[in-house]
Length: 226
Figure 1: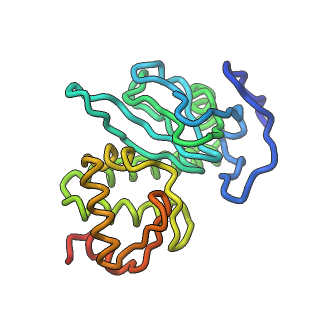
Figure 2: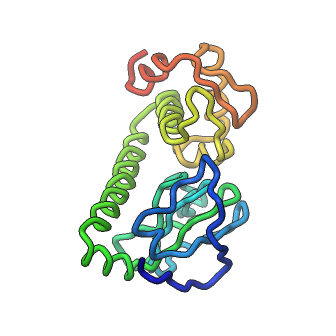
């Protein structure tokens, strides 16, 4: 196994993983260091050097930036198993913040490039993870052409798939984060959730806990079919 990269900041030894944690067994894990962040902590800032790549082990991350009109745009939510910090340029386009208590593995980008060049198995794993992230970016861009109910339905189906909680979702992010991710106001998000509940597509025991009651209804709505 390659030696671990020494990184600055708070890091901890790799303890026992919970059932919801992502496995620590890939190329990033072998080269990186496990680090923890408290809720709302900044992991890196916009325009800072993009010299490290991150993998979520537990918790959730939002990537965001402030637009010229002062509004916040959330580019992605990263959940256990997801990579973030990937950039084409040498600087970060978005900042990254911990939505919840967070554990991530952090590895130097240069070390991963060397590993991929010398080990085809690690390269395949890395490119597969990168491909998943690029696919999600493309899917998020498509949301901007949808109506508010279509965006919310698509978001809920995406979270159901990614959180793997079956019909019961425990959303890690607040309503304002959802609004900034979908390009909506928080009032529109809340009104749309209420409409879906009245239409018996979902049930909301709490603001974060969503029970999907009718997958077919959400799927039709997400694809523009009423």
